[in-house]
Length: 170
Image 1: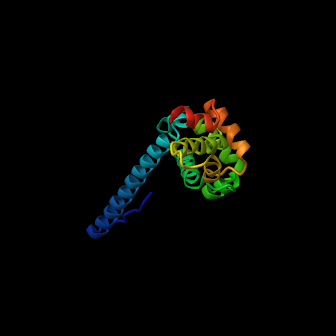
Image 2: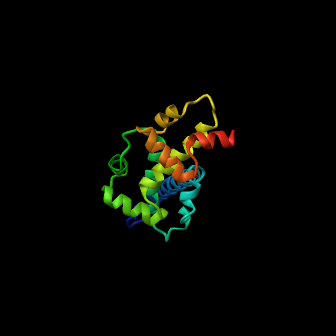
Image 3: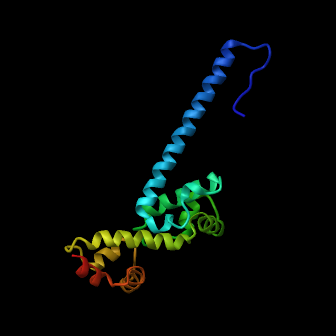
């Protein structure tokens, strides 16, 4: 409930309450538009992830979808940090690590760690298109501390090492 009007009815009070309702509806509309833009960004950045379960078809649980969107936005903004942890993301959205993982898996069909890896791998693919950037620099720019781990993750995702991928597609 937004507000109420007491009897006897005062036209100015009705006008104020209706004005508040209009402001609230506009705010909710802006939030929906913002969520749609965030969802589009996530779909562009994570096509394989959002393909598991479309984010707009979640059985009416908008709150969980919002939390997942917030987590994904945080990942997209911070994936290049070596120290990015599940705890960082959970703190950002105000949930425990365990519950965030549970909600994320329920909404997307994959784990949050897999989403982080996916974002990093897609960033690596974009960077590999520039032959002037060395592999160890790409590794550093996408948040990997160990070049061997990066190479193994990349090969697991794309079937080629970063060097082989670059050579094949350039």
